[in-house]
Amino acid sequence: MDGISAILGRLWATSGFMQLVDVRQIIMIALACVLLYMGIVKKYEPLLLVGIAFGMLLTNLPGASLYHPELWDAYIEGTLGLGEVIHEGGLLDILYIGVKIGLYPSLIFLGVGAMTDFGPLLANPKSLLLGAAAQFGIFTAFLMALILKFPANVAAAIGIIGGADGPTAIWLTSLLAPDYLAPIAIAAYSYMALIPLIQPPIMRALTTEKERTTVMEQLRPVSQKQKILFPIVVTIFVCLLLPSVAPLLGCLMLGNLLKETGVTNRLADTAQNGLMNTVTIFLSVSVGATARYDRFLNLQTLAIIGLGLLAFIFATIGGLLIGKLMYKLSGGKINPLIGSAGVSAVPMAARVSQMEGQKANPSNFLLMHAMGPNVAGVIGSAVAAGLLLALFG
Amino acid sequence: MSIGTGAVYSLLGICVVFAALALLMAVVVILYRVTTPKASAQAPAAEPQTEEIAEYGIPEAPGSAGGIKLYNTDPRDAAMVMAIVADTLGKPLNELRFLSIKRIDEEAGGGNEI
Image 1 (cartoon, rainbow over the protein chains, first blue to last red):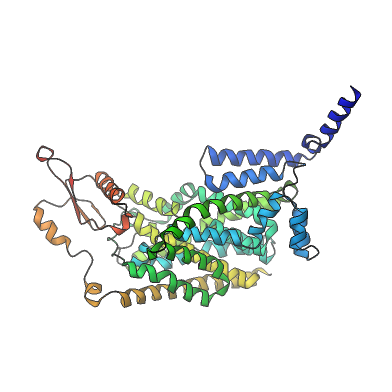
Image 2: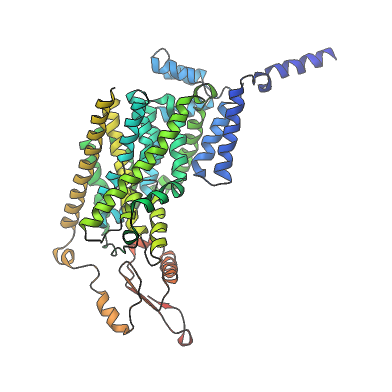
């Protein structure tokens, strides 16, 4: 009898319940459950948020030892090699390598490229200016983060939230400020899901009823030849201009080329389905794993969440203001509502432009017009990330 | 980094992004000029619609879906028809060109004509 109770006692002593001594662990487990609820029930970016929340749950369960940030600290300091991290680490440490070396975001971009139609952008190249304007949020948030005394590299990583592009945010943060990966990724994906709530009030405040009712002319047709040449030309041009952006933009354009050539359909199918889904699981769980209670629960996380919201707001404002300028310069032919779609977040931001345009004028179909700035925003945020990496990397 | 330096970096950053995308815009325009035969590049995209419009002899509806002309058709129905056609053909909506949509009298066979 004594033997059984001793065994049970030992089992109890080694269980996670006995190690659950810090209230912050319980808070993080509860927060993970809230994020799971938001992903599953509210359907806020579920493909990413469910994985992130589950990774957060796993990493905060005491005793599981799936992720060891201290090993990665030692790796960054140079006192531990990658082989030792793999040997001593847990499952999530091994998955995290893909984040650490920037592999997952690039592969996600490959899939995004295979799913993206650049036709609306090619039909209306001015969309690129709207995509550039919406990057205003990145640099505003960067400046505000500096005001809040964040180091420059961290401020740059926080700023990229304004690009409204999850893989880009993860890519840049893992290279510039890996300790802040969890709050930045969670802020980026949460606000992307909240775009239908964040953008419309700003859109209505900054545009007049007359501007919102503007009906745009149908886009010109784009030949297949142009669609095939576009990813090749963009890769050569932008990667020569900003070589640091090559991993992201190169993969985005490769994915798009696979889609458009018409002779690599099997590869395009794999890039946008099998590969994309596999990498999404690895990426989301390992990013969530970095949100360990002793590193996540602090005032800096709250500041990052707040700055992320401001970044989205200023990005929307930047796109709308250039949209209004284009409305004036074009003699009222361009609906400024498509400017807000420049914040990336494909295709959610374009859908918001469509919905607001139809509210003002039910016969208005802005979706395809907004897709131009929307995909231009993806290129714009990648360019901004490459620039920040070149400056602070 | 001081706030002043940060402000300079921010200004420089947004200018570089603008310049890069403006140059890319120029590249796209050149790409269009190079890959499109002169005659079709100069022809306005919406021109063929005028003949179609005259053919129906029906007053144009007050609203129109971009360049699409709607005749006795509710914009919501028109959007639905366009989505169904795109889905049936298995083509993205932006690769299709709808010139006009006209509702035909239901007794005479019913439906929308595209």
